Length: 89
Image (cartoon, rainbow, N blue to C red; front, side):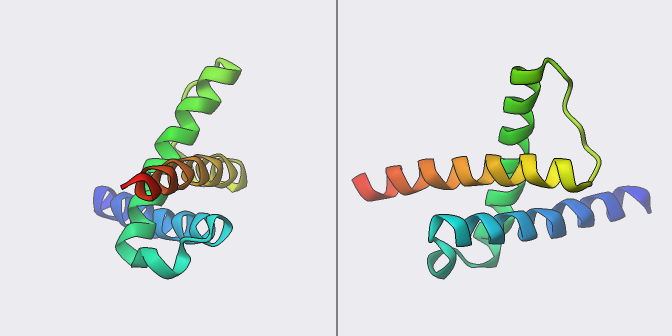
C-alpha cells in the first residue's frame, strides 16, 4: 500500500511541479497533463542531482517546500532545454 501511495505522490507532485514550470516557461498551452507530469518528475531528478552536486548533499525524496523548489528549478531547466530543442526542429 505504501508503494502505491508513494507512486501516486510522485505523479501528483510531478503534475503540480510540471504545471507551475510550464506556466513559468510559457509552455502551459502546449504541454497537457502528461507533459506536466513527465516534466515535473524528470525535473525533480534533474534539480535533485544539481542540488546534490552543488551542495555535496545527497538527494532528498521527501516532499516539502525545499524539495518542491528544487524540483521546480529542475523542471524549468528541463522545459527550457525542451524549448530549445523543439525550436530547432
